[in-house]
Amino acid sequence: MYTAEQARDMIMLEHERVKAGYLWAARTIAARICKQKGEVTINDIRDQLPPPESMHPSVLGAVFRNKQFKHTGRYTTAKHVSSHARKVGIYKLRENT
Picture (cartoon, rainbow, N blue to C red):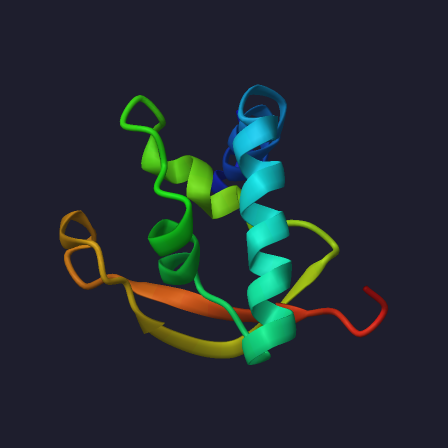
């Protein structure tokens, strides 16, 4: 039996494997936005690289789950309608990237 955290991490690893092209493009855009604005949210990614309709929204959770980005500890509201105003993290580049 897996804990909720282990299950989440396994799903994120599967997203990495299956959706690698989208995640690579999203992270490239996120890094560029961070360099311009100092921070980025998934709202910024959705604006510039909308996920394909066939892709489950949970894939977007994997965009910032790597060593390149660091959560700022702050949140904002998701802009897309289907999010029901859920809170999303604000990220920045780690110092060594």
